[in-house]
Image (tube, rainbow over all chains, first blue to last red; front, side, top):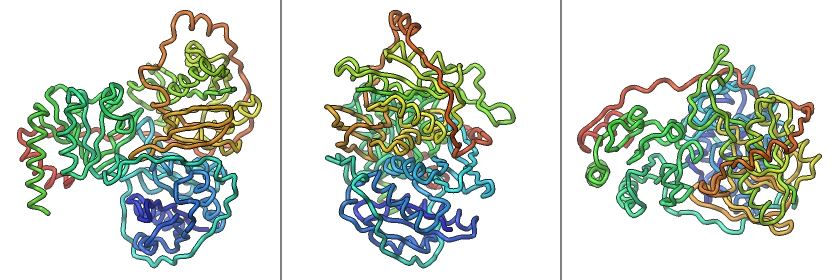
Length: 322
Length: 246
């Protein structure tokens, strides 16, 4: 019996959420009185997971897994879970992981609790707290099955250092042709820019920006902060920005440390989607905008004046605090 | 091509959320129910396959009789026939097992379900369904073309998109992008009249297990009042020294 955690990497480098899920797995293992085994695919520096309480890393080096393939990755994770006799499998909430987790759960006949935001409330029965109703509420969810899959929300539990020595072992899952019946043909991905899922800071624009041509100032602000850019639903519906940037109930959820909403009034659907962000800032001309009720800090004023000022001020701040 | 669109009956996106019976149940009092938005994008794409490629489109929902108005709306939008599995949709794994039975019996080539329902946000039904039936699966699907038994899908990934080649039988977890918001259809009077005559078959559930049980709900703690500032200097200072966000 152990806790298995899937630690995601990109181009060999562990993603930020890998350390978060490892930390979560360590907490689960402590509660169950067992240890954590990680599984990684084509990742470097596997020993680094030892810093977050992982005692063993099963490493897969396989060229056929160079491009993410949900079914093949899921089969590999299931193989590792069976080899390790893992009772609990911990995964992240990235797009790739949300793709593979239900496959893992179905293969293991496991109950799957996604969007988990805190350490298990109890292990018998096994109960976790997760967001539901698109962040308008929380559910306390009991996982009934013997095998369990837990999806940890981004930026909820945090990466917590627990110095352990991780033994690194090569692992070769047996993957048949049936694991590769969907094939990636083309990946079109922004490089060198933070994504909404991973970013510490998200800068988001709404209809108040008046048109797609005005996004330059928002992008400059995002650049200074190393932030991802996002937008409200009307903005993506009107085609000002791509769907991938739409955040809110029917778009992407945001769980960043800092969310800056510019010219977004704050419809209930939008507020739901961004409510997991820790600090929210609103810049809006309308003091009655509902977003002010959901924000931590606000400036009532014209974004076209304030955003460039804020960018300049932050440049100064960064120069002083570099 | 036989298409099954899985429809979840969910509170309207503008709903305020409350709980009842000692916070153990969602309070449906005064709540308007609608087709889950992610499912509606899938249903609309299915209509395109029906009109351009002659596909037949059935819908399925797991739920008691109270879900029928939502199903009738899907029929009014243009689905040919509905199947209601007469059981409370207690957990995603349970729902996937029920839908698997329907798909097996109906011989569907393509199953479109929303990537998640906006109420319980499990996001697991399409992937579990595909796995139970050993069908191909593409999640967060934002474009789908089918030629014969070959399918080309585009899925949304963190920071971009990925084009995928696969084949039928296929399950997709759909969302906005499968069609545009402006392509969504409001049922017209003729559609509504026709929907009344369409078959809505009720089937009893198969024996299935619940992977999870939601035992209690609560709402986020109320937010403190916003701090309004006049200058960007103050804002930067607060973000650095108070919120420690920069």
